[in-house]
Length: 225
Image (spheres, rainbow, N blue to C red):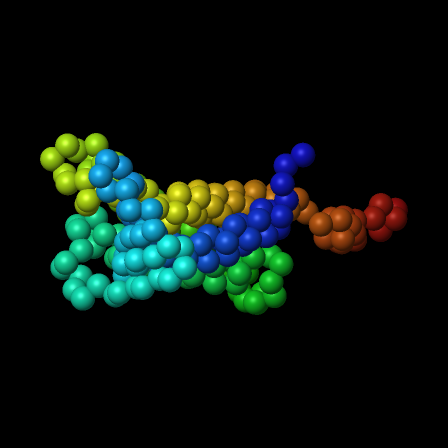
């Protein structure tokens, strides 16, 4: 059998909540780029992390020192764009989560205005899809830059980086947000078909009252006898 619209909405809300929290975590994590241990750059007791907002140096897996970037212009172009896109993704995901919670059938908000409540579902779905794309673009761009520099022989070995945990988490978060948006859009389509089916079918009580009115409106034969 197919999923009920309410089940799809609950699934979309759960996926959207996980995706929104994940988008915020990816934005704040410093592990976008990590130091690569290749060639003569084998310094096992020091690990460098580079994120969107700060860089951290970890010494011997014990002590960590983090420093916030002094200027946005000092960042590479991919990380500059990633800042704006990830902040946009977080805002879109939180707005979509609020719209989805208000428009879901399992909530009692906006019950008096059912049409407005119904249109919140596709809006939430499209916002989740946009948030997923806003996460996917900077993560893929940053990964492409890291891989390109890693295999570029001109780039010094000391400045080469590897993919950090934030990029892997970002790919997972983007898929979760896209799945949540798809669930909301599918639930809107199913609920629209069900509501049109129910509205087109007459109620039994209305049918009986219509028949009784029709019977009383017909003249009886005894009047003309």
